[in-house]
Amino acid sequence: MKALFDLCRPRQSVFEKTKREDVLNLSDLIEGNIECASFFEENYLTEGMRILFETAFSRFLKQGQTCVIKLTQAMGGGKTHNMLALGLLAGNPEFRSKVMPNIEKYKALGKVRVVAFSGRESDAQFGIWGSIAEQIGKKETFSQYYSPLAAPGENAWINLLSGEPMLILLDELPAYLEYAKSRTIGNSDLCAVTSTALANLFSAIGKAQLANVCLVISDLKAAYESGSELIRGTFKSRAIT
Image 1 (tube, rainbow, N blue to C red):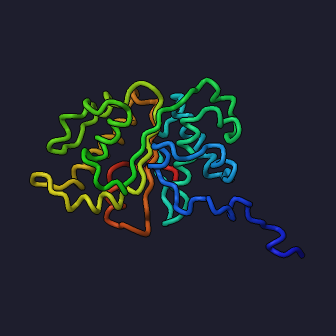
Image 2: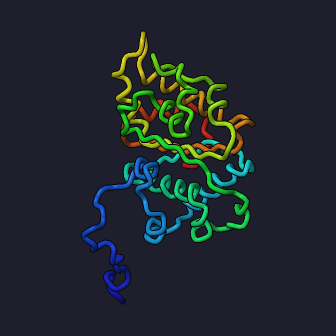
Image 3: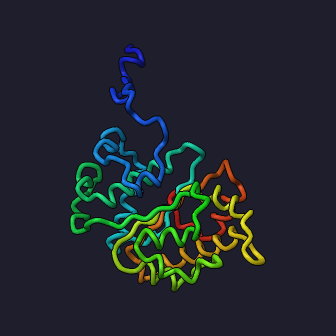
């Protein structure tokens, strides 16, 4: 019987001193800090990733009914990694044939706009909705919801997001929501306002006007319990877990 060392040899890149030691997150995706070719060369396409890709890309073509995908795993379970992989394929059509199965059905689909928000950005001045609006070049469209911070309604979200195919990635929100409880807004707090904004967003994405928009959100079962419970309470389960 062969030794484990003979059967499983680390990639040479593991030993390269120039390799980054920190973990990639959604800010790296939005800022263009991830080299797409090397990312997929060093990653294996799992069955879960395949299902995620199929579900999202069917939605971009207005052929899928699943509009909100919730990734639920314990800490370190690969949620952010899956989001990054999907975001890279959505924004870089030239790499799809190398990674995605059944690529033929998606040939007519060009570049998909990708917007993302990480709950680690606790200092986002205009909340999650302001960050999304700014990334798609429509920051002023939501100006009425910035001072004081107020939750955009369903129709406001539809007006903001309608048009081209779009992927929205929301990661680590339980941590953000727990922090947001400390931010007073009038007689309420940022957590309550954000929860309402998210509920309206989830509802809007289910409408026909946004049939080519897909939202992927992560949750943590084992950490940030109250924040996780708020997320689970904002929409009916239509998710991949």
